[in-house]
Length: 220
Image 1 (spheres, one colour):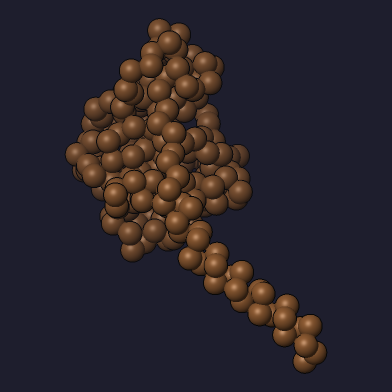
Image 2 (cartoon, rainbow, N blue to C red):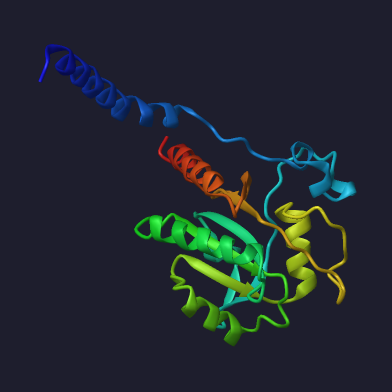
């Protein structure tokens, strides 16, 4: 090996070693934005909330998961979690979103602080047995990932007024329907810290980076 190749390898080793040390420090010194209604795209926020700058938190909820158990905010207490809205018979974006969440669930399999919450937007069709079958088909880890059904108006109000997940208006009635690729990152205080396209591999990498940054906030 020539002298120049040794020099190049030496510089490469130093650079890689430096990044191993510096990269976590960079992440540790960053902070994710806390999203208030006034900070979010107005199309995603109901008109009566658009100018609100006070602390926004995910409201209380009570839903039913794939095992027929009641799920509330208490199940996500002191957890960082990612929320989305899907339906089991969706032929377009939902399979990609489910694949993304499946990969994330595996990535954080040994991290008890990270969880996932998928709300059905067709809760009448997506009964507990349907969700249970879907969970088996997609190898959903129950300890990390809850698929939930429940009262449609309640779910749609959560989507629109808590998670700011959709741009459409509606009342959660029989003819109302929402469809969104948005993933929402929620911190341990039930505050929104990020929005991501659940069908994008690049956005999923950003989500993982942001989770790393958020984790450091709780180590201070």
